[in-house]
Length: 404
Image (cartoon, rainbow, N blue to C red; front, side, top):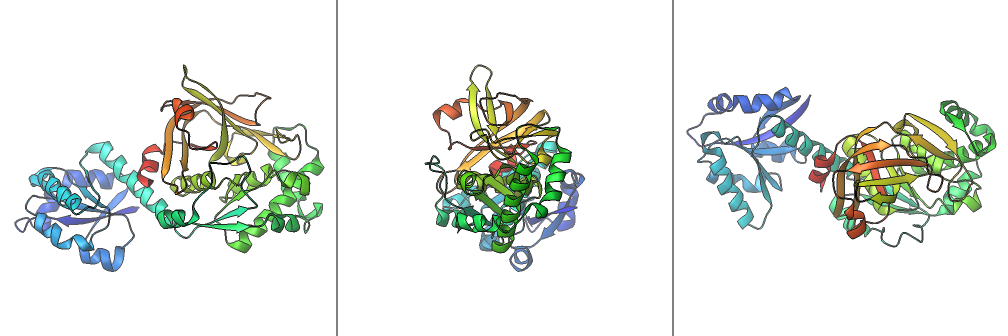
């Protein structure tokens, strides 16, 4: 069971036993959701729980001065939880105003029932995900593709905001590693991919062996540099290695190693953030077309984790006609479309969507989804955050907003 740490403030007239009894319904709703409530003091937070998810529980009026006296020991930014009983909402307003007068951030959570539970869970998921990102290394293998003129990252800003480190790795490391593996090293991988496929179209079995050699080289590099994620200058490998990165990236994402295409530094971070938030891999894709009347967008790419789809075919890479790509069919249902971008990774687009169809247009990349968005598709015309976006199954919109 997860634990919610609460630093409770109450007036001197209000004993802890009376506080728990008065707020029993409120606290029981939280615990019924699978989250145990643990009351801690400001000193406890400083000594034992710094960095853990923690809310300040304003349980009565008359506690404003106590809060002010303990403010320096409390988690920042300040989040006040109140159910309104015993004049606690009024006290929360005074406290929130005091914090903001100091030039600091403060917000109040004042909800009930399922809405309260969802808000707290989303906040905890976001807090846990942000902590999990700290110290992660993202490998940029090769150079970002020349056409990604708006997808770079200021690595110093990224490290300051999120705690992630970008590591530049020459493409030659992969090319040299690729030469170390033979067909014999990859037969089992190729068989597994082939046995799981609905069909194989353009590629030959030998193409699977070659693509799997690239996977082995990438995996060894990830282990060597202790990487949590990579983005690969994949198009350059078509000439030097005679294959594409599509299959290798698919296999890595299935293993929980975030792997993106084209050296896109912003999108690989989006994929990593979503993985830390949801526990699953996302689909990095190009928006191919939109329909303003239907508020739909078609997205596509030549690689997707094979565990993300209900079935897949083995295809060639769309642009080059070479290598091994994955044409997957995803289950219909609710998903989240997102992009975290900007030089400092401080911009976001996120929308709920229904995955309504796996399209099969031979004029765009292999795996194709038609998504009906909740947010306006006008975003793509008016203020897009670069080209690539990420799709993940499930509704994580509010939790992702909390992360930002």
